Amino acid sequence: MIAPTPEPPYVAVIFTSQRTEGEGGYEATAQRMLELAARQPGFLGVESARDASGFGITVSYWRDEAAVAAWRAQADHAEAQRQGRDAWYSDHCVRVGRVVRASGSGGR
Amino acid sequence: MIAPTPEPPYVAVIFTSQRTEGEGGYEATAQRMLELAARQPGFLGVESARDASGFGITVSYWRDEAAVAAWRAQADHAEAQRQGRDAWYSDHCVRVGRVVRASGSGGR
Image 1 (cartoon, helix red, strand yellow):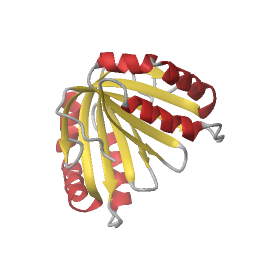
Image 2 (cartoon, chains in turn brown, yellow):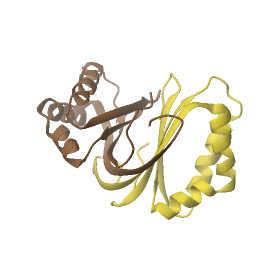
Image 3 (cartoon, chains in turn red, green):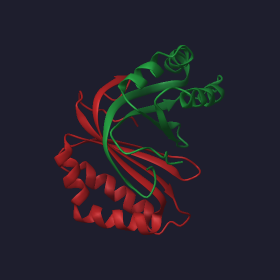
Image 4 (cartoon, one colour):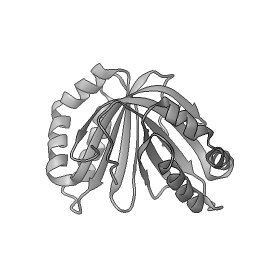
């Protein structure tokens, strides 16, 4: 679903990843992280898609860099990041960007 | 696949969309647009994932805002955008952001 975000500026965290084959608690943790993120101060929304090959993109939107930093450091999330690196993702990348403009039929 | 991008800063165009049911030439045009984008000046890479429900995220990376503006105005791409709005997407959003930092095992 397209996230209803406020007028820019705000911050986008683009997380791209390739899943490994095993499950190992991934789905439950991913779901828990979405719920946890949604309760973080400065959280604006999240969008996520993963294709049949296991390649996925999750973009989360935040009020400012401070909100992103707090979420990155949140203890349960830090542990999930470690598990992700060790077991769930064969490859991943996090890019942080400042959204300066938005348009389209959704997401505003 | 995670796009190998240079060190930030660069520009990310986050395109989120919900596909309609019909095909109507979508796949062929989408493929052609990827090839066309890759030949544009300032193109750095692209990542795309669409899930089984038809929700998709495509993030393209560009050297600067001028490169994004040129791609948006490219004639074949402008026509594809029109078809997208009219037929292929029930909902879509484009967000443009300036990437300030990147990390992870891939994408650099």
